[in-house]
Image (cartoon, rainbow, N blue to C red; front, top):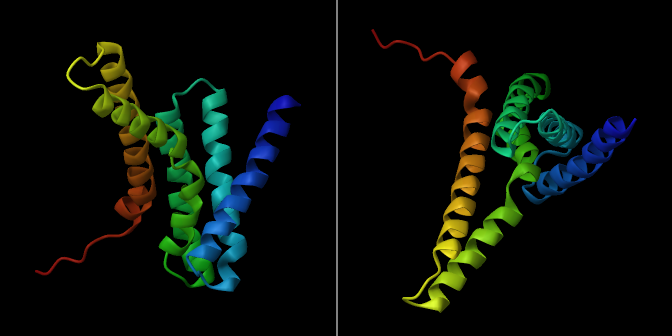
Length: 156
């Protein structure tokens, strides 16, 4: 029961976040429910994968892939570009606190001067690497359906 409650709670708040960003990005009103659903599906997938023991980087990739496939099919259903659904859907998975911690580590390093502690450098490097890998997972996950479904027409 605890996992179900966690996923429902996660779905609600990630749908609210995706809906808020969809409104901020001025998507068509008729697509707002699908944008919220895309955000909920992606974040539920990420949370479920983390509960299964995957790293946050892998879980975010799988969540973004779900959002990408959902955006592909929602674009056909609602006759809108897939980015209308995928961008608000992945926004709740952006690693904001991790990126903030990376920036704070870099500021501490710059204020310390030449005698920087190696632990401080390692912390900044690890946080920066994790942030970059999560953002890369978001990008690759969102474009995965395009790589599969969209075929380029040959010019010959």
